[in-house]
Length: 598
Image 1: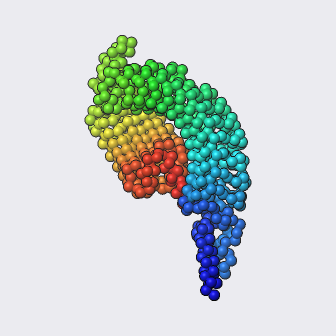
Image 2 (image 1 turned 90 degrees about the vertical axis):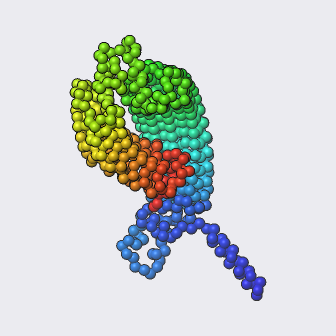
Image 3 (image 1 turned 180 degrees about the vertical axis):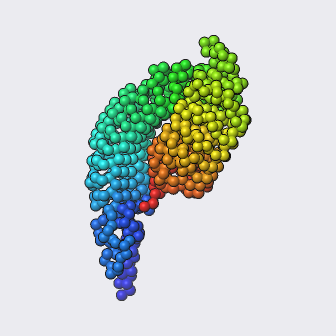
């Protein structure tokens, strides 16, 4: 009898151990998923997907078999189809063919697992719009994926892909494709068939050339080809009429690409082998705002650099430039000029450390020494720092400047001198202004750039909202705590700098300015941010919330996929941890997405 008892005891323990290893999902989650259509199983250590997840919309729930009455909120027969299934950050090596039992899925998130393949049954999820497969071990794009006609977003970064199927071109509704951090050596010509594509990321692969068919992607706004082995760029990429941001860092380019893409605003060509800038390439960049040429081998800057009339930021860090043309100061929109790490002669390190505005002043002072550039009017011959009214700046640069005077109001004679000119830029920074000069409205038809930083403004006058051509506003280092609601009328505003003020929240009006690309709110007292409103800012690429009072970061902020630069350091929140912040914006957004609750 004792042996029998011991056998029974052993069997029962064996059964217990087996039962313990089966993956389980709390029943409350499944019950909630039947109502919401969303199920989040991220980060649960799953090695396989439980069968009751696949059969969620098929099997009769337990409560239906019990003799209980249901309230209006517990009617199991009114369940909704599962549309969102999050399985990220688990230990899945595969998913079952039973995934076909969830035909209503719109979002399927499998990123950060150990999957090397997908079942063909994935092709039956014809409602699928988002498929996230990043951080897995896929060696190829499953052909079943190429049949998903409604797919809008496909992210397969950080896998083991060495090639792509021609069938990828069948995804005609795809707007986002991320193939970064793989082992791709070439791209199929069918990539050009993805005519709805708006965002294409190919960085960190082994590409030595780009297919000509890429030129057919006329809706792509962002193309990232950084960290490859490209030696040149197809000239027909200029047919990508919507292209605004092009990343070509860390390649083997010897020339600046000749790309007359009419919408191109940002070109990043750092860490290449470029030795000289040629007129043909520069003259193409008719809409360029940011040009990054750092860590190349450029020796001289041609006079034709002045053709870049829309340029606001020029990064020439770590090149071989020894002299700067004085004409560089004639760039009307240039705000940031980075020159560290160049063997410059005749320009002291002290001058470089004072920043862009002082350097441009110095260069403008050199223009008067050149006979052909000399102006006969005495005011134009005077250095900007000495002139009370700088006529040269007003006439030539369309710039009205009265900065670093420590005055409480701007003299009327300054506005009078500029009355007959179409002033586009105003710089009244580093004064003692307590209110915005009312006469600024006289330039309402032309003014696009205002710098009122380093003053004592306590409120922002609604008058500024009458300047409907405004694209850039700099209000840093003031005493502002709110912005006028009328600012929503500034439909062309691209960037606003509000660092070092007294904002305790993101000004509500900013959520209504859909043209915004850059919002700088560092070093304030902001305690929260609304991701649902931020997501409406389709063009927002830079958001600075560093050194504020954010106690938590809402996971939904990860859905703001237009962000290329998100600064959160210096806040008292605990997650994301500093190690994740250090990995950059993409890593932070991906982390936040993985934490979105159902």
